[in-house]
Length: 156
Image (cartoon, rainbow, N blue to C red; front, side, top):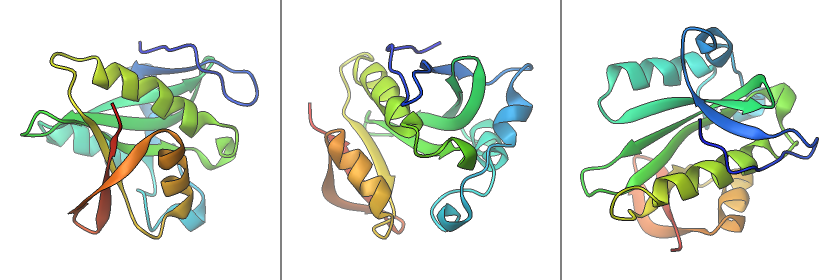
């Protein structure tokens, strides 16, 4: 479990836990708001399959107290940078600070790995809520693109 003692706006403790036999169905069913589907997968199941079929990504269940409320992935790039990807907070849980607490929990954990690697993520340029969130958490565009998404790196 990854736990930095961050709370959402309802006072629930946000933790990141391995996807396992007990929670994978709840993670697979996580779905964003309809207006977000052009930026993220329609269901957490897509990200779970990606992490199962890829040597790069590792899925984590996002919990608020003892309830699965989302999904996030992390991975290591060829250059040693550590990435946050596939963050999906269930539509019913949005606006409660769960996404913010998720990044605040995962980013320091990734940065503390062997060699203190840079922490990066990417987002679509039209996804202004994501850009605002990541900028407020210290991520700044690098000028690079990954497919059609801007790459951002957290300042050390």
